[in-house]
Image 1 (cartoon, rainbow, N blue to C red):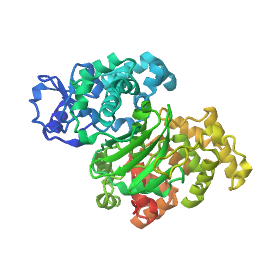
Image 2: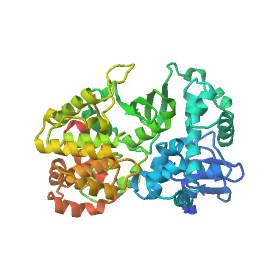
Image 3: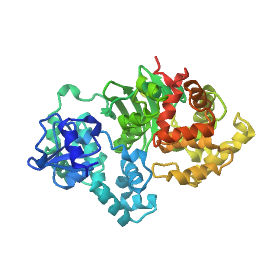
Amino acid sequence: MHTDRERCVRAVQSKDARFDGWFFTAVLTTRIYCRASCPVVPPKPENMTFYPSAAACQQAGFRACKRCRPDTSPGSPEWNQRADLVARAMRLIADGVVDRDGVPGLAARLGYSTRQIERQLLAELGAGPLALARAQRAQTARLLIETTLLPMAEIAFAAGFSSIRTFNDTVREVFALSPSELRARLPKKNAPTAPGVLTLRLPFRAPLNPDNLFGHLAATAVPGVEEWRDGAYRRTLRLPYGHGIATLTPKADHVACRLTLSDLRDLPVAISRCRRMLDLDADPVAIDDQLRTDPLLAPLVDKAPGRRVPRTVDEAEFAVRAVLGQQVSTAAARTHAARLVTAYGDPVDDPEGGLTHLFPTPDSLAAVNPESLAMPRTRRTTFTTLVRQLADGEVNLGVDSDWTETRDRLLSLPGFGPWTVDVIAMRALGDPDAFLPTDLGIRRAAQELGLPSTPAALTARAAAWRPWRAYAVQYLWATDSHPINFLPV
């Protein structure tokens, strides 16, 4: 996108918010970089230059605009719709791998040399992994400065900086303000009251239809791990340094997010996982425009545009729940999962009550006695095989997973058919093109709309929807009256 100068200039001059996060505008005269929709008067085209990432802007010596705050733009949709090396690396960086394990750890996860990863990231993003991680640390620092009353020294280390001096220098360089000056700009009434609790906004590209997104999460919520309360979806989070509780409330122009963390070093990871679960980095205009090319699908898109794919904060957890939900009702699947949570999940304290446990890890579930599972023997075998493979690392469902390789590995397991594998690909791996032609709800919706209802014929028709077939699934499911399609009252 950033290499198409004419298109970028038009987006900046029209203040088109759809392109926020796709590219960043650096102004040569002021040495400031902005998002596409910055409200100030656009600079002259000859004074604009464009970069693919905030990190590239910072590395080139530009500072963030104080008006549009480009560091808070939605992420590029590229990293959630691709499965190549760069996209996998970006997902891992967002998940804090570079801060925890360094660039060698990132390279080990991806199976490439550090030199190869740096070369590809530089070529596509204009910045290497260290610069990208530094930009993320700067944004984390700003959030902590603005949403907590922590001393600056604690913020520095919580944000991932190795020293207070590096923290001070980075904040000044990126935001042209010292950390204390950033905090002084805040209204006093915005000061938080509870320690360890952070309140922030999660931006997204409009439109966003919250009905199926939050409806699905609430209807399938596992008691003790998830709940819907007072217009918000709440769930526990298992994080690298501790645990947390996320409270997510849909608003007109953002998702309100309240995080309660046992260790503030987990802040960027918690934000990244919540954004991924809610699919907030998607480009709904591009997706819906493609689906509208099918005249039978277009009325569904026009009726309620901006549907997202409800995903997960824990890929292994979702795979286990997919197996528990095979050939049973949503209520029965929740009951099975709740029993495992009570018996094998780690207990947590919820200041608001309602949430009691973290979902069990594969290692914990590997100790389950199969005879204690109230399900057919073949499904017990499927369950025990999956958790053993996850615990041993034979199946990798993380953000760094290779989608094709993971699909093949899952299909080789007993009890895993195309439906289960594609559900996991859609909601755990994040494949935007995963499709469920054998799903009963999809076939029923297809028949009502006049689409082919046999799996082979429907798959052939859906070729025109690629690479967004997972979103077509959401629109087709929405024709049913199942609770997953409605925002809870």
